[in-house]
Length: 280
Image (tube, rainbow, N blue to C red):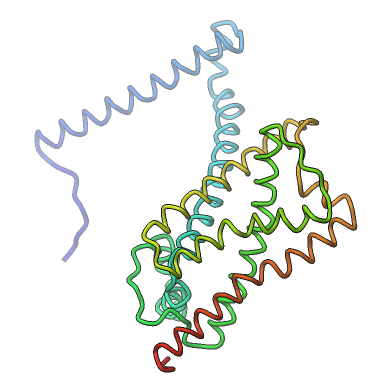
């Protein structure tokens, strides 16, 4: 039995088609008039040139502008979605087991659309009886993912904290002491959300949700500073990178700081394994 939708027939169908055709003509006319006005007033073209340059304006101005705007919008959406997913993961103590189950239910069958859909709706996943992974491979992935993301937030929030201080008029000198203090404060932001999840604090997700906004603001500010080549804006990581001693000290501090969440995650799983009497 065919489920193909057929176009309406009879007087009602003809009226619907006529109404749609009028809407099409109205849309095209409004767009053409707007572009013609744009050519006349903004570009300063004479009426004849403005009329015959409508297609050129569409291809040269609006298509390129739309592509640039769309590309920036996609980049912002990707960054926000990724940071949002991470906040959902760290605010849920069952996240490692949930990720393993999502993988097992979708990827071996090649259902990648379902895999990404469940990641986007991570908060809708049900709680698991045991929070730890079942397999060694999943355990290694969970540790590695947590370490890499901790490093990312050490870098990102170090820059964010430095920017907040700089924009408030506070000049933070780069010293050996600050190269430990700054990444420590940076790591404390996401790690505190995970600690709240361990303690089952009821507002953990509310606290973690500000991190995507912070990442968004940092990305916008850094992009604007780069595009406009601002000489006044100072970047923490740029100053660290330009000094080999500072760079080495920052890398050493970040290497062990990023392991702290991994260590506590392992301790938490050991506790839960003992609590469940070793049943995996």
